[in-house]
Amino acid sequence: MTRLPKKDVVIVGLGWTGSIMALELAKQGLDVVAIERGPWRDTAADYNIGTAPDELRYAIRQDIFLRPAQDTQTARNKLDQVALPIRKYGSYLPGNGVGGAGVHWNGHTWRFMPSDFELRSHLTGRYGAGFIPEDCTIQDWPVSYDELEPHYDFFEKVCGISGKAGNLKGVIQPGGNPFEGWRSDEYPTKPLKMNLAQTMFQKAATDLGLHPFPLPSGNISEAYTNPYGVRMAPCTYCGFCEWFGCANYSKSSPQTCVLPALVRQPNFEARTLCEVTKVNTTPDGKMATGVTYVDSAGREWEQPAEMVLLCAYGIFNVRLLMLSGLGTQYDPQTGKGTLGRNYAYQTNAGTTGYFDKDVYFNPFAGAGSLGMMADDFNGDVFDHGPLGFIGGANLNCTTTNGRPITSRPTPPGTPRWGAEWKKATAETYGHVTTVGSQGSSYSYRDVYMDLDPTYKDRLGRPLSRITFEFKENELKMSRFIVERTAEIMQAMGAKQMVKGGKAATWNVVPYQTTHNTGGAVMSKTPEDGVVNRYTQHWDVPNLFVSGACLFPQNAGYNPTGTVGALTYWALDAIKNQYLKNPGQPLVQA
Image (cartoon, rainbow, N blue to C red; front, side, top):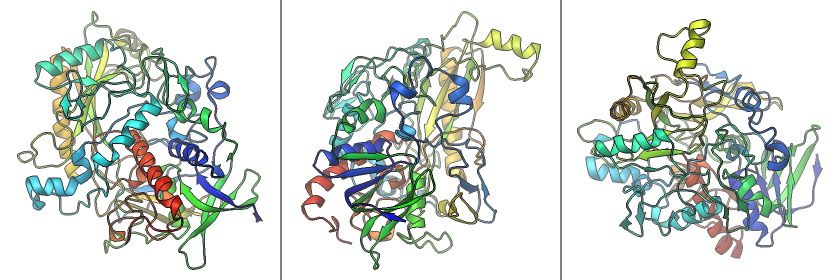
């Protein structure tokens, strides 16, 4: 192993959180190196207009996603099952390379509700402690919405998010989301132009007494220059967002929002095709000394550093902590330990509607976050008392794409191939839309991550093992939400509807969402989590962790907006507190 010259900061992963951390700390004059497992990816070279809209390459062959041969997990539903390796990513799709999952996402950019940050105390205060399922391990965050608000605001301005404020400094705004937390400013850019499906959803939801509003979108609606001086272009509604890089500089991503400013920093260096294998520590384990990594030729290197920042995708941050022996592994039998605890996911469901031939939705004129929403059944906006479950979901009607390979909906009973299938495809295309939902996923005692006792990766390290199942609380919530989506679809005038409820058993094969959360949660005390309220490791003060692995549970929203806000929240503490007294805990245990 070759020991390299010491750096001020070493960052593991160069996606959303890694690129933001690198830029902000490089601007502080620190010598920063980021180590990224995948290749360098750039809009002009990798996602140019001549090659980016390739459904076969990106959506089917999954060109920019992690391959199981590089890294995978084992999965099981229950403790008494033997976990098996995921040999083809399906349920979720981790990114591979610079930009990470921030390259291929659809762009939904949410703020969690204020009550989401005080979840256990809020629910206990409203319904009583007995209303929470006995094995549910939800907990309050150690940070409040009010504390995160300015950082939500700045992240949205970095991204140029399109939307309409619903609560501006405590004053409810017409056309926005009346249930959102207060905002200090309007969205940076105006909402996207809605398609027919969104117009119909808006009317139907309003007629039903709901409060529809435009989806906060990382597909920006107009030319925009962000606080870093990076210019973005308006979305062209090409329909190639999810699973694709944006050729038009219109989708918020590290490539379009941060990296152009970062690469100009002379004190920043990126090392790609290099995989970090361990966080190194002093003999007493109380300080990080840097990381060990392996390059594409199999050579091993040690990169010493004064600070270590884990900015990889959440499940990989958790695994690296486990492989490095940093923290106490959670034991579901005893409930002791924190590392791997409170893993959660997302609970999605909805209704598909088939319309008459005179209703044509033009689905090809879409964008990843082109949608209308309603939050009337999200979080604790509605009374759960008579319903017997906790949690909720946003209701949505989006027009994302009409791509030729995968966008071929047909009515129930249609053969899966042959002349009848072709006929149904031709007759149905353009006359179908959905009302979907993104539901909360709460944490439970027997849902967690650890290291698999049997299976190892190509470097001989144990794989991560995920034990996850949809619980009855989430299934009950999902059944309730599906009926709400069906009511809206019926009001929209569908001639035929198909409800898509959440299956009782989590299956790794069909794609669901890349919203894995938890495992290295932030907490008020070391007994309840891995990092403190500033994302600083409880046991190793010069180690900070980023990403959705910090969430104690997941809300009825995409995680990215909150991940971005937490990144700037942590940076504020690092720049204004930690760097003035390095190596010291920011919160006393």
